[in-house]
Amino acid sequence: MSNSRKLGVLFSGGKDSCLAMHLAQKEGYEIGCLISLFSENKESFMFHTPMIEMTEKQAELMGKPLIIEKTIGTKEEELVDLSRVIKKAIRDYGITGIVTGAVLSVYQSSRVQKICNELNIYCFNPLWQRDGIELLEELVRENFEVMIVGIGAYPLDENFLGRIIDSDFVSESKLLNEKYGISPIGEGGEFESLVVNCPLFRDGLNLKKFNKVMTGENSGFLEVSSE
Amino acid sequence: MILVINVSSEKLYYYEFVKPILDILKKGNINFFVKKCSDVNSNDLDKAEKVIICGTGLLDNGFLERLDCFNWLVDFEKPVLGICAGMHIIGLVFGCELRKKCEIGFYFLDFINDFLGLEGFEKAYLLHNYYADFSSSNLFSEYCLRGLSSAVKHNYKEIYGVLFHPEVLNKNMVLKFSKK
Image 1 (cartoon, rainbow over the protein chains, first blue to last red):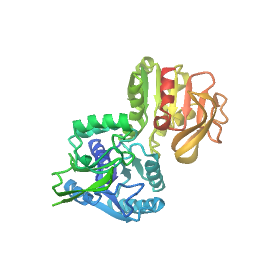
Image 2: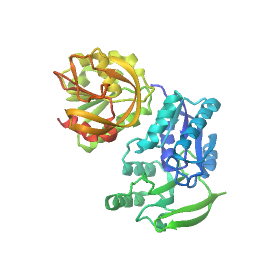
Image 3: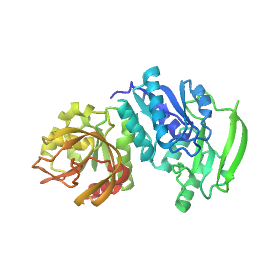
């Protein structure tokens, strides 16, 4: 089996893209670059917007080049912008495949599949159809330090912001899923995450300022900055 | 015991096309073992009560160079389910041709008869650049009428082929096959 393929990672800085990249590296693939879209649309369908600026710092900690593309964030414009940035990654870094952290969203994954297919490069979704609780448990087991930096669903409140995904979080996620239908991985936008440290980083993000900004009773985000 | 066959040429596709099948079987308390298609031997086929041949990525056509690994299908008498690339393999082994057709995403399929629990309009996830054309096969019947073979069954054996990926939206179909 081939594992010498050089890949680009669609990288948001959240738990799913980091874990997908981790799996790719564990299987022996070379990561050529990270690709992040900075969406100006805070309700982006395709990309998680809170904390995306942190990707620059994370890329530095991983020693990987990062390609940044700005998008106005409307549904189809995002796809044009994504196609353009993947073409750039092919040209500049010689990638022949893309890794995404797609888990359940057919909307997200099928659009990336179409772009990759048109560009004649492979598309890998190593978290595809994974059980949410199993995925959280793997993050804990693999020593990922993941912080909740955004919330957007009842009954999550400001106490959820800043929490780290640990075994207590996993237990609570099971209950929230059973009682309120909250996706354990935030697949429906219930929460957003930021990877503060993981086996891919040479050191953890040094976060220095936290400010909880609530935009509603059950929606808000964590403003953080790094040194 | 179900033999699950991995046809992917890329290691990462195991997570995307094989593991979701294994997770369904685990949840259904169904025993299984996994083999790469090139490693399947006669002991495996003897041990298996049923076989599932998984799909793979859009550009991963390496299995076409390993079709010899599936010659056992011709005389195999136990139930087999081929998913996407697995259906391509079944078609090629039984004399069908591959045709170019790209479909990616949700589609509604119209099942004309009960097909492993699927009947009438069902939403399904498609991810393919080719399909195996069973339309002129005397050995297989089509269960889904949409102009290209999407769900077929051997007329005399329990050999099924589906172009869609049941591990995404039609998980019960995999269980139905496995527990049948």
